Length: 236
Image 1 (tube, rainbow, N blue to C red):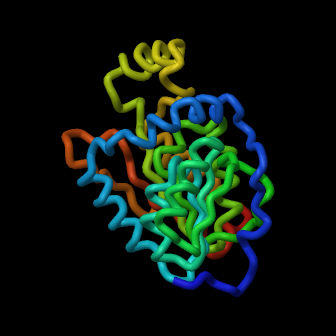
Image 2: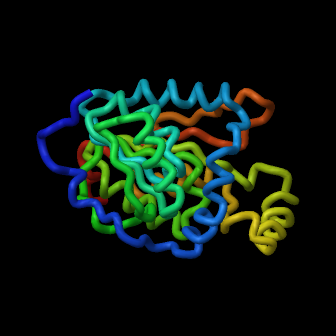
Image 3: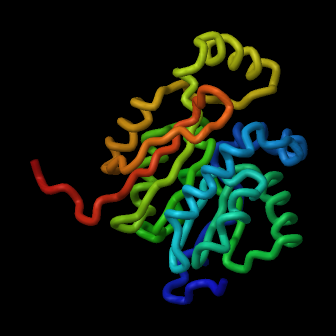
């Protein structure tokens, strides 16, 4: 599908070193292993892809934050006008670019950037995608505020996020700290669905849909679609 030629929204994106260096080092270290790990719930993943594809259109400018090794971006890019997929890890992006070379998607560009990289233009994107990311960012409210700025009025944040606070308390309070100490896990935030929804609403986003799409027992990952209002709220 040919890329949109209306305005060069994606051209100014930075491709240099990103902030969040500690996160980048962790993901760089495990990138090769991560790229070969099978998806645990393939049916749930495919259900999410179908749901997201229904929210995309050929003229859309789309940003994916935390794209990892690029599988999801490569699946979704043919449905949109242009797509920029970013990740804080240079090693992850290198794998994504190699996959793109074998699976050409001319409307897709991969770049190294953190989730709150400041150099992207405000109001540039119809959709911002964040899958398995929001529990990993250092400052959730700041990241969501940045997402809100990047969205066009009426644009959508489409996210899927593990809610660690809904798991067995031993997982976020014992197992995750132990794995971090052993270098086997990154820094993660423990919050529930209500916390995540409230954080989005604090940044002026309106919740449009909340779903669970897993097919293997209880799903701790919440799928949320939130919109940026067409008009900013009035005073008072």
